[in-house]
Length: 385
Image (tube, rainbow, N blue to C red; front, side, top):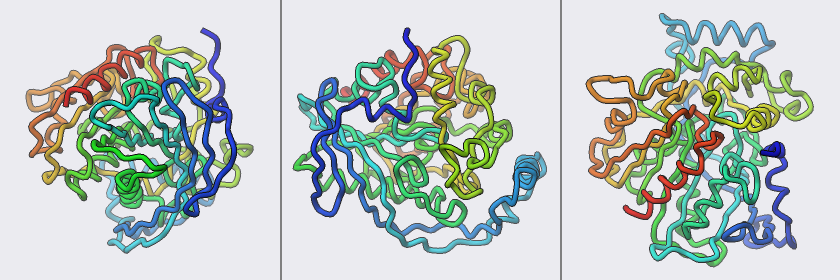
């Protein structure tokens, strides 16, 4: 297979049409992609979030950051308890880059998906490889007749990049996601949908769990990829060899403040996101060349308490070799059940709970050769609910 183009150029594979400005949003309508068309928008999203007060300064240099990560991830660490000093209300408006794709033929249920990427990626995780690529989840959704909104999370890609300790935290990301659901329910671009489905990957999945916890059944169904409720994630974080992003890639990320972090090598990328040999090496290289950051605020505030008020269907889709959320084996038993099934503990009121684990697949589900079959499983599940 010919090497894939770098992820940062993927959106440019779609020829952009005439710019228009409507309702104060900068918008560009793309030419037709397979099974639909896409519209770019930068949306001002107003939120009120209960963020944590974090008593930590931006790392002065790499040695200071490395020392903090070592202390934080040590087995007897109490760093989180020391750093988190209560909460405050973060009331703000952030500019969020979105790509809304409309199918040529809408399914009978009038479905729209909201897809949230995880750490290390931007919105192009969902249209990996561009139009016609077998890794392109957006086109799989469009083929099924679903509209889909993908976006750059706060601090990523073309979205606003505020303070990465005080502002870019999980509670703020949760509120942004919820407001984007409300945006879809308001019928942007003259569209209207009856069924609203959340699809997440990794940190994006954790975001959706918290949306369900805070907002109950705001979504009609939730798909969690690259995710379980297993407690191996913090251990995996210690293997990321976190680096100050602006120092790791000055050309791409040089403008980011020092609390924005990335892993430091393609070796680390492979270990945490890929399962050899079930991927194209060009995809691994592209993901490394175009990796995005996480903030100290996100890392220190992540967590997925149960969502007892949520009762709608849930589908957990996680590779059997996921290193971050399964320690490399998602079929290991905890309290008599495998890790995917065990994630039901986060949704005690849900009756329709399903799982699927693509074989020989690591954490970056969309980046593996198994992606097309995984997409079929997700779209069939959505059609059946």
